Length: 212
Image (cartoon, rainbow, N blue to C red; front, side, top):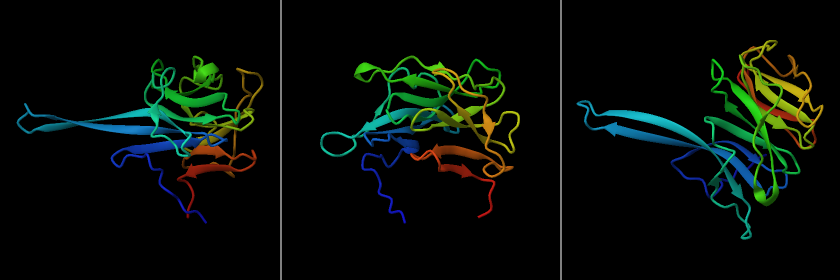
């Protein structure tokens, strides 16, 4: 059984999504959502407008034995919004994430990756060769060894609204033709947020197409 414990640095009035704990447990990456409300007092009806912003943040396990409060990631992250959560290889050298492609006609989601450099800097993001302009590719989950990539897409061949697909690494910047995980995983609904476990055998995901 599980006994969840709330992380101490989380603010009560914020929303947090898509956490990823690095395999050595030294970092927690997550999305923090900011909701801003602005009241137009010049309006007779005092209209209230609401805007939502999402930021990728990282909390580091420090010398005191606790995770710090978390800080917004600098370049190359958070330059394009909205932004999805990350998935990081076991050596902490490569981070995969998804962002909206504003250059496409339908603002589709695409997957990018960055490489960790010296002094905790990151390379410029590179798009993976699995992205399509007319469909969404998002919610990547990279295997610990960095050789297998699971992701969500509504591309042609999907069984439902959104399916989980898998691709194998062929080179540093190239991936094999993705395969649909099939009916054992995907339903007529949506399967999202895959997570491949450390043993590279157990896959966890969210589904709204199964009866409970």
